[in-house]
Length: 517
Image (tube, rainbow, N blue to C red):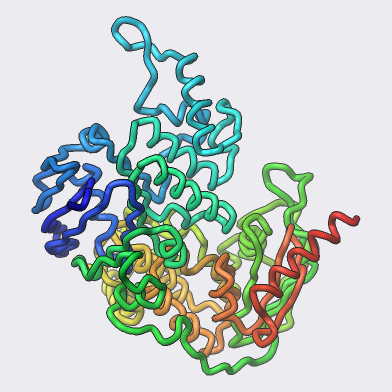
């Protein structure tokens, strides 16, 4: 008889106007890594929120069975009491507190007869022990804001381990991590498996899922498609993607009718300093150009300066002591702020759509028209009929899945949020689009749709500058690629000559030159 630590039977969950889950069932074996995959909006996070008590018993139909016992969790505390802990994509850490304080937040180590007083000696000792388990070598008194995203993810896992976790749920754990941190995190999951901890991982990075998972359950449109087992089933990316999208994806990247014209945009001798430390130079004498109808990629490792460069170009949204020249159609343009950038036909789609790209508490309609309210207003009064008309047009054109244009943007899946970001900048009618990680945290089906939008814009003569941490994406989408490292351009490759190896060679060569100097 199979040893299942968890079973979810016939789970159905409805939101106003939407059935998020329809009779979903799946089982998880004790001590295994079980992956949950599906397109944005397939119901993965909703299912895990039910399991972890975020959506309490009574708000859904079906049964949760943990170690043979039917559970009716009324809140997160009750699920944690059964050894279930969820780590959300947006980490629940307090940046200004120390690692030790964050590890035992809500799980304070108390002393005294009544247990109301925190025992700081016990807190520190246990924190040191927990850090050793995951191999985190930071001082326990270090503030969380002073460590990188990969180490913050480890702090979240330590928090879970400190609660005697049996089932660890990780929602997109590597979405914001570089390749090295992602590899280390996956390695840690395998080590936790050896210690008997069961993990459920939600991820859009199919290659990572294939690497570590024992079983993979595929959801599509709120229903269970199937569960694949490493030992018996076809366990590869193509097979999983077919289950997710319901069809074969013969190519991950759509073909584009290339119609590249003259040079449209130039950045020359661009220098930027850190706003927190004006003596530290972040961007060092960078020069790039992009033609009309061209998709230009900027590749590089995390921390190479790609985002800082794009933001500084977009109306000096980042940096101090900025120097250099920006030309559009051969003429120099001067921008003092983001408004000047938009007025000059330049748009920047940020990598952080949730906190910087959208107003999540506002509806789709308002988010789409916000960058150019002047186009739907007269004498400072917004024409609501025009606002509705335009928003509906973009909702249909970009296939944004929502109940209506009045749905709050924060309620949309990641892929649909990204489409709203694209909608608002397309509405602004820019000539140059700076796209920073345009497909981060979204599934392969939604990615393909975003790629089609990018190609369509390029075919219309728009100039696209695309930043991505995923080298296959850069290689598959771009006509030309700049390689960036340590704030400098260290290579330029055409689409024909570019490869992952050549991009990394540019980076490694520049690192050697720095060491020699």
